[in-house]
Length: 105
Ligand code: SF4
Ligand code: SF4
Image 1 (tube, rainbow, N blue to C red):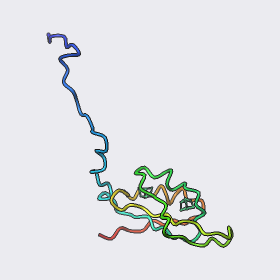
Image 2 (cartoon, rainbow, N blue to C red; image 1 turned 60 degrees about the vertical axis):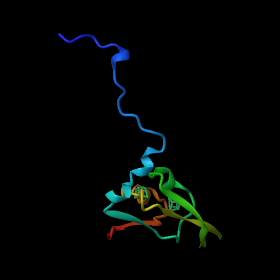
Image 3 (tube, protein in one colour; image 1 turned 120 degrees about the horizontal axis):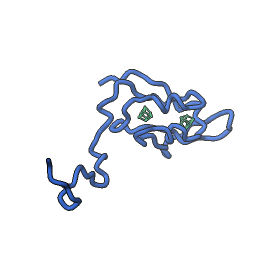
């Protein structure tokens, strides 16, 4: 029979320091990559919300004109260091402005 463990005898398990996932470059997993077409994007941000890596961002320095809205919309881009190519952004884009292409490394 083993002796009973008490809380003060338990060793501390895995503890992640804040910001620890920054060093995990999930972009290395990618075999497909999103291609943002910057043509029909209406700025709904669905791609930003569904991205599991939070790596889609609005690029305020780049814009495109959307004729049917008659205004310019900021382009979306992704961070290749963290995009793992899951395709969720392309799947959820309501105006089909994101394609998935084969990754070339
Ligand atoms: S493919 Fe996946 S990980 Fe990459 S930007 Fe789109 S949702 Fe994010
Ligand atoms: S989901 Fe499509 S339309 Fe919406 S912000 Fe992203 S690229 Fe633009």
